[in-house]
Amino acid sequence: MHKKHIVLALALSLVSMASITCAGGGNKPDNKTAAPEIPVNIKSCQEIVERISGRKFKSDVQGKVQSAEEFRNFVMNDLDKSLGGKAKWEQMALSKLGLLPEGYDLRKGLENLLVSQAVAYYYPTSKCMYFVKLNMPPMMIETTVIHELTHALQDQHYDLEKLLKTADNNDKETSIRYLMEGEASYVMTIALLEKMGLTFTADSPMLDMAFSRSKSLGRKKLMELSMSQAEQYKEIAPDIYESLVAIKDTPDYLFWMLTAPYSRGAYSIHSIVTIDEKSRNWTTINSIYSNPPVSTEQMIHTEKLTEPRDNPEPIASPKLGNDWSILTENTLGELGFWILYSQYNEGRANEASEGWDGDRYFLLQNNKTKDIALYLSTVWDSDNDAYESFNAYQKVISKKYPSSELKNTEKSESGQVRYSYTTADNKLIILTLKDNTWHSVEDVPADIGWNK
Image (tube, rainbow, N blue to C red; front, side, top):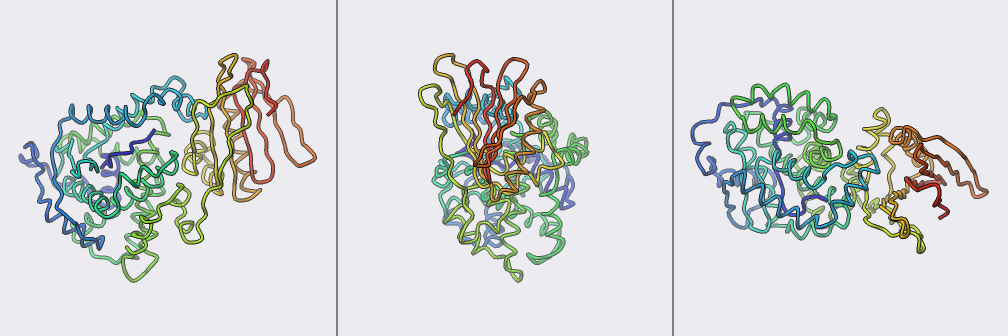
């Protein structure tokens, strides 16, 4: 469901990073920003990116300006290619998980989110970067160019389109975006600090504090920080102001899946770079592109990238017989569970999502009645991790289905615990826990039952 072909510079991420590094709003834009060209020396920005990352451009990068209408048409076409006819089932699965409001138009929501938040983007197919918002302070335009040039440099060395195509589930794709967007945000922030006249080493406490803060900000605090600056941007950067206002009503799931790879990904890159305390260790970053992450867990806890890697356990499809068919399936990952628990059990979100070792959710349809149900299968690093996550998910169930009542609890000789709930509209919810795994079946009509 994500964007597989473009890599963006986002208004909210740019503003939050600028705030964290004390850059503020910068100077008012001059008249050049109204011209249909990027008012920055791209060649000099390339030299900055080369110096910080230690890589050389194989060719110069072109920059173009695109109108809002042109960009929206581009996004619509790209969404049609990447989503196809799957948007309806993806939306329904995410709604049953409690991550999107019931009836939410995922296709339209993604379109509006991308169009409202994108400042610029690099398109691997055309090998060009495009600006869609230029009415900003010069410093913000320059740092955006540096962000997108980092993507161009990544593409020249590692083929971003090919890299993104290796992702066979949402979590793996997001982990790759953590790497790509995290590095671009990291390079951008370093350049911004240098532009402000600050000098530091990679392990500088000031640098660590900046990236640690960007990682720790929750949505509420991040929005408070951004909205507190909205008024000043209203005059000096009206495009950014409109973007900040537009994102307020975005569902948490889409908000975090879009923004976490930037601000939280920058911290991940910082933690990898500072493995070598004496210098910026880009050798490790380069090696990760050759062996990219396969889960957000690996990018959230970067020590899990070291060999032997902590790769997720594969999840088998449920044995459905002839009764049910799978409409769509995907993976939440640690980030997805963190978002879910943040919505329904905020105080325990970090603890309940850590220890993730694999998951798969399946949207099912009964072949006879056409009823639709959800099946979620998970595995965790330890029995204790599974138990903690299972307890958190029980709270999710109680809030997702406020009419649900626990009707039966069973414990088998093998140690499996099974909780059966019914809802006011006569639907079944069945949770099972055994050792380091747990499963959930939801929205099954009681008259059909579930004996899998």
